[in-house]
Amino acid sequence: MKLGAAHAVGIDIDPQAILASRDNAQRNGVAERLALYLPQQQPQDLHADVVVANILAGPLRELAPLIIDLPRPGGYLGLSGILASQAESVAQAYATAFALDPVAEKDEWCRITGTRR
Image (cartoon, rainbow, N blue to C red; front, side, top):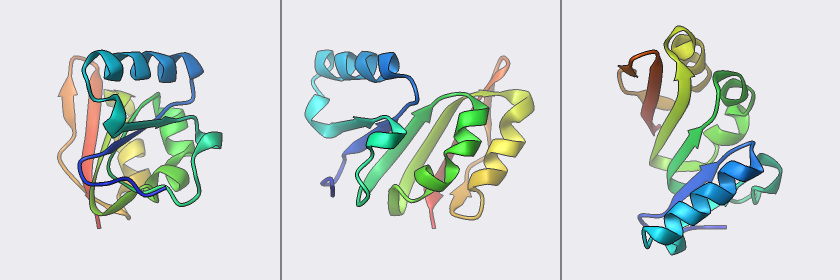
């Protein structure tokens, strides 16, 4: 599945989170620009401009091989749901494929963003 410009893909391991994201996208008028998947439902040829995943560090590391292939070259990655103490290990799982920005930290949580090489 090839999405047009300014489309985003969301991945989560929790079906309830997918439903909540769809509901939020609908309420915000962006549902047609957002594709949401459980890992096992991802189309093999899926590529997007922006990929976001808000799940815990363990699943982010485990799913790295799947998530890394989703953004087009020059596309953006946003990962959250990461404790500050786990940010380095998650960043390492993505560092070979992305030019990572400095980790953003608020309280005990972090966000990791980057651009696909």
